[in-house]
Image (cartoon, rainbow, N blue to C red; front, side, top):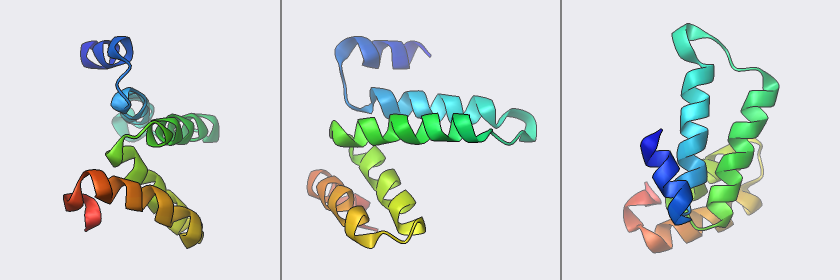
Length: 90
């Protein structure tokens, strides 16, 4: 949590993705299944991070759009992510 607080204070794009990671992990603690509201919030936080330029969030959102069978939408965040970090092309 201190790292996320620092990221939030510094306005670093990954701040929302890291917050989503923490929320996802805590909601899944001890084998629990997050409710749909929590999952929506996690996705919303990742989308915000992706729009702000976090490459990992961009890849995660591309995967989500692929699962929703929306490859045209998935292509844009994936391309942005790979442009910033070619290792994410995998």
